[in-house]
Amino acid sequence: MKTWRTDILSNVALIFVTAAVISCAGRISLETVAGESGAWMTEGNNFTRLYHVPDADLTPPLTLVWKEKFMAGVSGSPLLTDDRLFLPLLNGELVVLRTKDGKRIARKKLSRGPIFGLTLADSTIYFGVGQTKKSFRAYDIRKGRYDWTLKLAAVESAPVVEGEHIYVADRSRRLTCLKRKDGFVLWQSKDGSTIRNAPIAAAGNLVYLLQNGNLTSRRMDTGALNWTVTLPSNLRASPQKSYTSPAATEDQIFVTTLSGQLLAYGSEHGNILWSYDCGSPIYAPPSSDGSLVFATASSGTVYCLNAEAGTLVWSYHVGSVISTAPVIAGTRLVVTANRGDIILLDRLTGQELWSDRLRGRITAAPVIIGSQLVVADDKKTIYLYTCAGEGNDR
Image 1 (cartoon, rainbow, N blue to C red):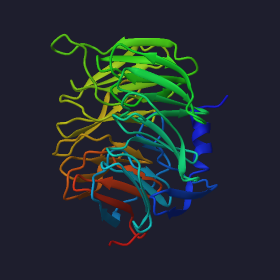
Image 2 (image 1 turned 135 degrees about the vertical axis):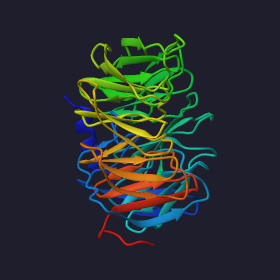
Image 3 (image 1 turned 180 degrees about the vertical axis):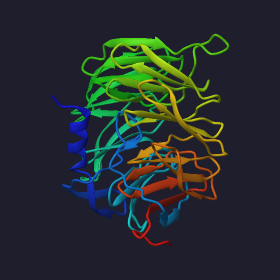
Image 4 (image 1 turned 90 degrees about the vertical axis):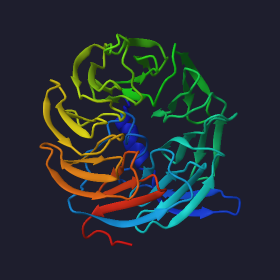
């Protein structure tokens, strides 16, 4: 039986971009060939949204290879392959850069407003465009044309791709299952509250958080409800709220809340396994490698817990508000802070290994593959770092 892991491997084999052509009409046409390199395909790296890149090698010190400034800021998680960086911008443009030198090789105006939830699968990018008649779109970067567009309510989060299907949450409280080939609707479910952020793939099911504080699991094949649980109450006796996506390992689902809790649930039945109080609101998703789970509190503290027991392993104080997910890069953990800090920690001990500070604020998690790390700041600038000796400052 196919799993999201086998699908990712097949997707990765097709997304090694080798050339780009831009017509006067702004059409992007990307030639692709088979490759075996990894890729950051969607928010959180893959559809479990664990922010885990096990084969990354960010041996310190890191060096800045290039930086590029744009007319508009980045609207969501970029996509990264070995030699191409895909940037969704707030002005509705998709810009493609060459990773070795930051050269712009393709661009297309995809929307009048921000592009949301950019996701790459095989040679197609999927994205939402907010309040328009055709709010979810599939664009084939190899053919340089749309495969299809679909009228839904505003789509402002990343989809889940599984085999021949794609799952999309919109702002009308609906979760929709589509055929990737033509956008045909296979099923729709409707919840009692808005789906706040991107759904995740967890053990063959879809799991997502609702704005009312419910964590919900549905079957991928039919949309049937598996379970729904309400997050524990806060000090005001109301359910806790979360404005981020959950993250899923094989048997656990992790959730961070605005009340400062890191929660672990069993993926099969939705039973709560443990909770940990981080002491201040958490605005970023958690990350996990299966044995450890990480959370970044707004107080500026990074927490590392034992994933099975929920006990503290180590903590590290940055000294600045953090609103971005920590990213696990091999044996290291990359943390970015609103003040502009980029910090490389030892994943097991929390020891600081390297750091740098940008001029602008960092409010989106970095993207990483191999020895490449990409960060965007609020001054509309993109930075690419790599291991010392593998790039030259510009």
